Length: 215
Image (cartoon, rainbow, N blue to C red; front, side):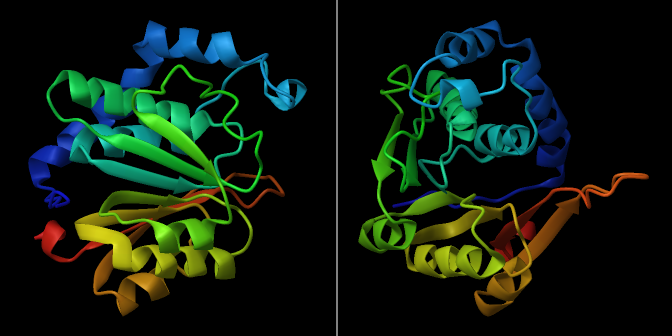
C-alpha cells in the first residue's frame, strides 16, 4: 500500500529548510562532479551544476517521504540525482523509497550512473507504455518530458490509475495540469517565474494534490 500524504502548516515551515539542504551537502556535489564528464553526451552537461526545479523535487521527497517516485523525462539525470539523494537521506531516518526514471534515450541518466543503484533505476521506454505497465502505487509522479502540454496531460492521465491515495503530481509545463486536477478531484498550485525586462517568459512548475491532503 502507498502512504497517504497529509501536509500541515508545520510542514510548510520545513519546506524552505529542505530546499536549502542540497547547497551544504558536500557528498551530493561530489557525486555530481564525479559524473559530470561521463557518458556519450558529457560535452552537453554544464560545467557548473545549477539547480532549479530540482530543489523543489528534492524538498518534496524529503517532506512527504514517498515510497515510490516516478519521473518521466530523465535527460542527463540531474533531477534523478536530487531525488535519489533525498531518498537516501529519508532511508537513513527509516523511511525507504525508490526512484524510477523513464526516458526513450538509452543514454539518459548519465549523472546518476550506478552510484544510486540502491535506490534508483532508469527504464528505457516510451513513458505512456511504461506508466501503463507499472503496478504502483506511485506516491510522487514527476512529468518532465518537455514534449508538449498535451503530452504532459497524457502522462498524468496514464499515471492516474497508479497513484497512491494522497499522491502528488508535479509537472513542468502546467498548461493542462489544472484540467487534470479538476478531473481527478485534486487541488492545483502553480509557481511561475516572472523575469523582468527579458524576452524569456520564465519557467514554471505545477503540483496537483489530493483535496483531503490540504485539509
